Length: 400
Image (cartoon, rainbow, N blue to C red; front, side, top):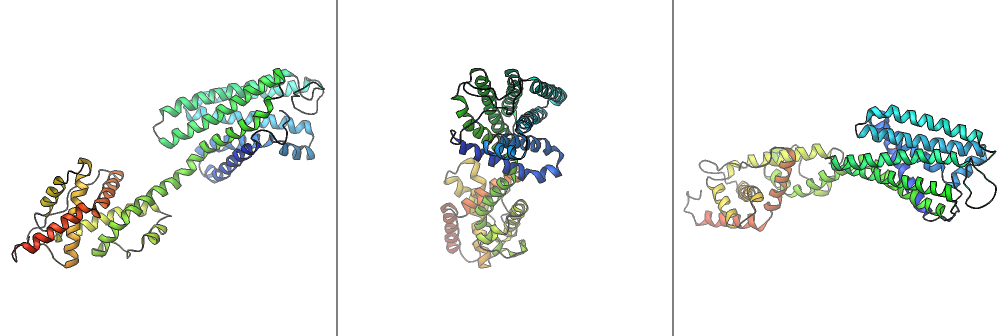
């Protein structure tokens, strides 16, 4: 809409923001093809990327070298209007206002018709550029810009309100963050449209220098908001790998003394993690089962009374209530592993595996992480030392 010098303020930020939006658009394309529910967001971000790219002076110059300048400028504004409509329709669907989509499309058609009509009836012009100083007019008249910018301003303001209101109510963290980031980007777009209106009415030459910075920040926030769904998979994988990394010492110890619980030999931590990247969720699930199976296989190596002594040992250490069962299990497991390595099976009734853990996978993993931490702690080591001294002090045949 406005001529901008090659050294406009924060022009590099504008390029970086647009690069992020294009990366998101391209990465989301395969998902949008396979999943109809993802297509509205992809279309909205894609059209916004095209519209903002066409506003770059370098891109406009290339287009005008091949096409009629008037056609290029009008096409840019039509694409921008379609992008605003796509974003408006997408946000309305997200917040549950699907019935308003027909009204949004009708408003877009009316605005588009008005723009073309005003462009035709305006005085002769080649370019759609608002001059900042005196001289020959190079654009349609003021009504054209008021209609175009007014539509953008209304649509963006409504989108911002919907994103921020809905974003505070959504429970899912990534969805809430995505809506708030996307809404912030649209809010910056609304600021850009408001400043553009001020420029149309005042012709203040200082205003256009702010456009690249605002446009770049807008692209960055919108791209980040749209990118969050793409990050769910890598984030989940990174979280799973972190848990596996922390569980590896406990798992390796258990499967070495009870090799029957796993189909593969334990490997180094690095190799183990690298082999689990592709299906980290399944590998983590299997890891939790193998740890549990290993503990169950050690029951015959835990003499009766061991569990009670472990519980008393943990109580004396004043461990926080939330970690007591994990600490007890760690002490119990440490002595059972030592007995298994010595081939000392329990004489009489085994003490049994402590009944602890979680009701779902998240709670179970949380328990196992606490167990892994206590398993290599001084608490478990001191209990094992006490059990060994007790065994040595007991008369032959009465160590249990």
